[in-house]
Amino acid sequence: MSEFFAMASRDELWSRGALVETRLTHGQAHQSGTEILASDAFDDRGLRDELRRACDAGGAIPGDIARLTDARIRVVTTATYGGSVSVQSTIVVTIADVSVVTTPENLVSDHAALARLLAPAAARPPDRPLPIVWRNGSGAVLLHEAAGHAAEHQHPPLSWPRWLRARDESAAGSADLLAGERPRSVRRESFRDVPLPRMTSVKVEQNGAPFEWPARRIEIHLVSGGAYEPLTESVTIRVAIADLVQNDRPRRLAPFTIRASRQEIARALVGAEGRPQRYPGVICSREGQELFVASYAPLLLTAELA
Amino acid sequence: MKEVYRKRGRVIRREREHLVRVSEAGEAVDDGKTFSVKPLEAMHLPEIDSTAVNAAARAIEALVEPPLILERLIVSEGSAEHDCNGAKWSENTRRVHVAIARPPNRAIVDLADFSLDVVERLVDALRRVGSEREALRHIRLAPHVGAALLPSLVGAENLEQAAAAHDGKGRPIERRSVTKSQPPNWFRPSYRARPVRAWFHLRAIHRGEVDRTLPEAIALLAPIENRTIHILCDDGRAATIDTSRIVAIAPDETWYPYAAGAFGAEIML
Image (cartoon, rainbow over all chains, first blue to last red; front, top):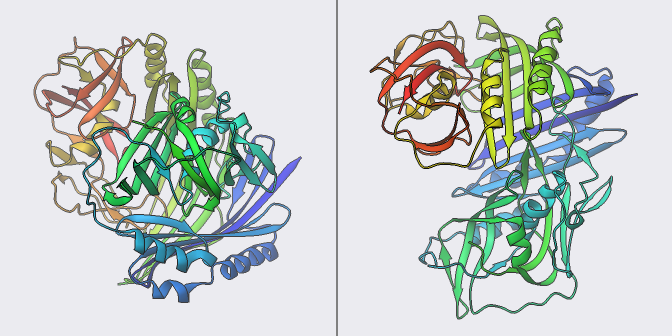
């Protein structure tokens, strides 16, 4: 039996309020067994026009972007068809080489939040590892790498704290990432790509977790990237914005990198507080396909990681 | 001046168990202010026969048996027609990207043809791989490993750009010395990508005598980082090597798809 997929995508790059690059892509793919026939020409031109219209309507925010003259902004709006049409817009806002990933409805507030967070480094790196408070939903990135990608690779589940939940939610259903369940949704970046089980929306929650603010700690606000190495089951997190906090006095740290095995991360998770907060920023790259993954996590506390 | 670039292409690609046939055409316009790209839905190029791609992929799959893991295999064949402001040219390409693992090691190879020699040697070495040993005093990099290193040697080693008919804007690529200054040619890996200046078809200059009794590095075990490479030797040894002290180089004529192209170079470190 043949499966059909179609899409249209508009990708715009704005710099200092001016449009510098714009790309329209559209195409369809018929999949029969393991063979995929992909083309930018549509069997049904009506469907092509409907996807292009949906895509243009979903990304219609040039007025907002033109006012953000201090930033580099990439807007990608994709309309896909796999039985029905759905539209997703993601916006990457970059100021001074630090980025957040947001949506049209959160663009103005996330841009303002990023501008507020930017500050020069004022503290020397700590001479030994410290406890880390993962603010702003950034703990979702840690679980995305340590539990989400491990589940995609079908690595066996670990002993996680009993108060912790991490699920991937999509239209295809919910997957318990801590139990090693693969994401239910099969996704692809474009009509040219092979669809793969990929995360859609990672939701981290806590239920009755302990939490106590360490007197000396690192507080992470934004990460610039993460990676999971399936051969060694190790996680790398590149931290873009973080503070060294002592006696409630925060001082900005220079960007740094955390490396730990997923076992070490599972053991280091010692606390959490509050409800999940939206984290502005995960573009996940796997097999050369970049996809936006929505991310939510409460305040998380990890013990010292190298 | 407004620049209009059009491309039609077909590619057939084996990726994991999937066989993907892609046909598309597109236009990129640079008016000096905005770079705009759109599909053309033009008449497609003729179908590409899948026989060679399937045969190459199956041959590599058959080579890799436990405890080795075929992590990634992409075998493709493509044809394309280009037109940039009236300059027209066409090309046919073959590519193999393979990542074979024996945890915790992963060897990566990129090739521009479907010959199996390099992959066979890689599989044989991975079967015998041991733990990483201390840095070897001298080593020689196989030509395909040396080719992967050449883009990182621009400005540090005497290199040459080999001549070719067309760059990404249809202009001729002239033979010349590679320097740290701005490259004269433009690289355009896709019609969707804005062209960037790049040195093409890097070729090392012969110097010294490569000692062929030394252990031979036949694969990279990680991406090149600064001047350090993690390599797998043909005898199964894994090592970390500083590439800043090159003793001898012997270039060869095989082209590899690293950056905007690099020719093989046997390099003695």
